[in-house]
Image (cartoon, rainbow, N blue to C red; front, side):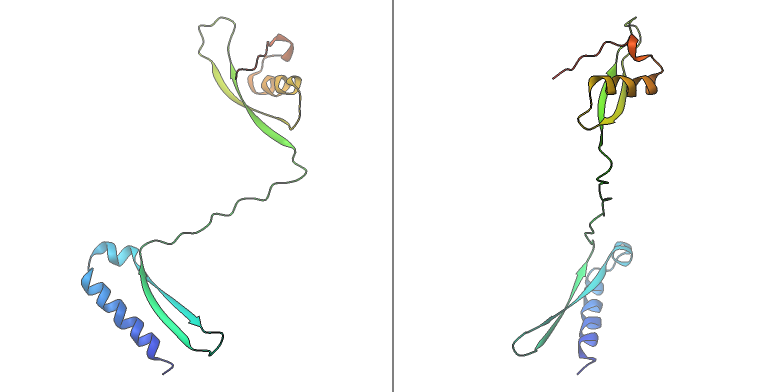
Amino acid sequence: PGNRPSVAGAEGWDVHRRRNDSLVMDAFYGQFKSECVCPRCDHVSVSFNAFNNVSLEIPQPEPDPMDGTRTVPVLLFRRDMRTPPLRYGATVPKGGSVGDVRNALSELSGIPPQRMAVCDVY
């Protein structure tokens, strides 16, 4: 009896493949085996299911508690107005000031911060 679920799974997969025979089936399908054990009587239920996709969580890096920065989107308009505005992402300390945005934008654009006029648009 220990081999019976494997045989049933192989037979089920064979039936599924005969019904859905294609290159897509060969390349993108598979079979899950699930086992459930009853906590009262220890009965084991085994099932086999065909699948064509698997959802996986993409791990995100843990935020560094020492990294207290954020990136602020900034549009830089030149004085001559003939040049289209340039889009930047200025990285500044969380809770920073307009001066921090100015200094970060200065590093990105090469324009001295004292030559900038800054406004916030909602």
